[in-house]
Image (cartoon, rainbow, N blue to C red; front, top):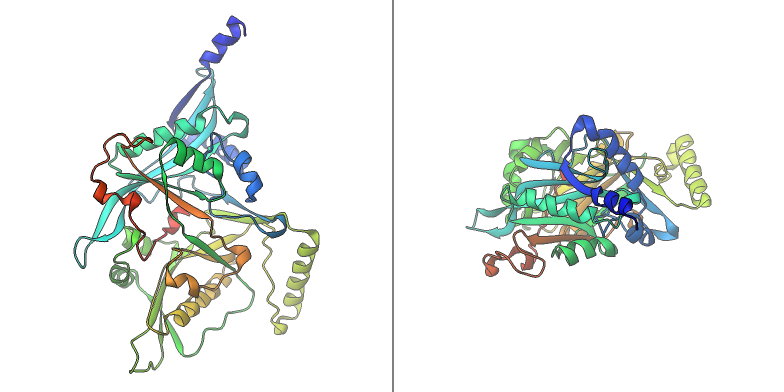
Length: 423
């Protein structure tokens, strides 16, 4: 290599700075477009990462017959972190000083969430936790250490704002992402939520007449969750604000009409979040015969609705989703009441032409997961949440604090709360 080439290489530094809306929006949108890939496992390792960076579509798995689910973030680029009191988007530039292009981006936020353990019988223990998400690196600039530098800078930003732990999410099949976060940065696999999705049909789902569905005002919903989510992990300290948010379409309570007084009382509770304004999903890779048969079923259902054909919405075009969160149930009729609430949420989603799927994220051992209606083709059990204690190096050195109170090795709580704002 000549002296000129060596000198030019030295000027090709990685520079990380905060996102500027006017300067960077077009470049980041183009980066998102270039990084968009499917969900099949054979694409995950090579197509989505630099140095094993995080997947674009974190909550997915390989589908039958090669089908994949594509996810596109739309609207506000800060949508997944803006709810936090502290949040940032960092942009990586690569190239000669003053002429570099934006080739990488990461988002981070610091929020206060419950630890899944109580300080007293009624008061939960909370902690400041960082969430790293939305790591993207241009396909033409991978294997240059850009993802590593973005993660390092994001962690430092969060630690400076008091975060005690950092979390990120990927999938079990995403070896490259796990290699970066678990191998290089010392994150440990932590929780395994399950994603349960159900398509929205043209016809109303039947809610049994013996079940009564009530909508709770946000203050009453917050009081109910305060009692039902103790102890639970990752309940946000600003849960009342989430319940009152304009995209929370309602919190619904299901009870029995004329319950049997000899049995314990039964009820179910959930909230509905409208994600159609921030996400677009699309199924790709389907065989032409499958596409044609589903289109025929939709046409038949449209022209002969009395047949009540369970036609699938057109998921091969971009569609939106409603997310169910805060799913709780109790009593012998709890599972049946929760199924009724899911049907009610389906009926709410029918009113929005942009919504084609209703979905929920739950802990794998949560009894509510077994009661949620879902289709396997729209569901996933490959999610992996990883966590590390900030200030601890990958080799274990650093200020580890009290090992007896290390959340990273604590057993999971009975309930895992998944904040729909961070989907």
